[in-house]
Length: 220
Length: 243
Image (cartoon, rainbow over all chains, first blue to last red; front, side):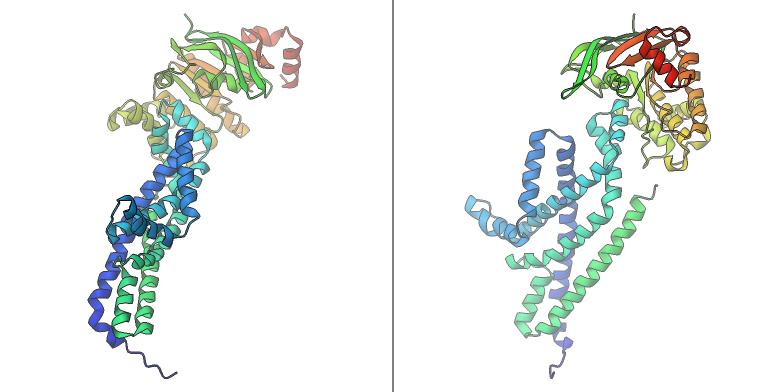
């Protein structure tokens, strides 16, 4: 081994890399929020909604869970323009990640809803609440409590998976790393740095989510 | 006029006919004790009264509201017909007070403060004033069931349906719940109870209903029915319960 590590050569590109990191964080935050909203709606419809709505949700979930993320992303960015839907790479990245997490979180949240004893629905309904009121005030809170660890893991999977959006030139951390490597050919250093950044980000996200969970679900 | 009027109700789960033409009239202030073997249709009948189960034929009128049918106003009905379950079903993510306040604030849009006052009042009635801010998991089974009763009472029901509310309790906790129900009966609350507590049915009930094979098999004043059951099925049942 005669290769000499020269991290100093990354220094001129610090702003590019930082911007990429910030984009990755924002991308993860926004698509996590939107994806969980989609997942909550999907799981609610599938468990409490009419049959036809449940069937639509099931189709959506199976379609997304059984195809590669990169193909979903390419379809949205390169495929949809043929149908007249032109999206910027950033919008396409947000949309693809939201749709992807939406499908997985639908399944996770549905499992949580089904883990709440059916008697709680009977009790809520017997107190003259509608089933949507029961869902909102009684079921979802308990469901999220049960599936919070699983959902946290899925959020981190989505964050790491977001590296794929660099393939449609959405300017995330991986895109920035590719850019730097193509300029100074310091592939070893730049990808090592990117890997460390993802590692730290994942660990930080995990502990943040754990702390957040303690605050939200402080009750027994 | 009857508060609850059940006429020739039939109910099937698939092939299995559970209610085979049940009729029952309940007047204001009645305490109706429904007894019978498991599988005789007692709980199903109770669940039909507040629309938790649908039925295929016959009619149920509760407080003048038709329960069955596509356009039944179940929300209005359930404001007047409360129900307490075998498994308490307290909401574990809410405190005792919040359990009792939830339906008031969501359904009746009662302001929080007023709802809490009502919660304090009904919890005092079941002897749990000091547990307002406890979590359900911190309570004994008997206490949880008393909270469940208070939660129903907070909606000011005209009828309270009790579905084997002491069956999931340890024997030493049964009486504290029965005492609360007895107190409600004394205050004139209309009660329909599915129960296995024969002594309670005899001493507190105003009407006894013995269900057998999906029908009202024998009915009458509890003391008389228990003293001299007319049908061999009820004789057997009473003997079997060690009464």
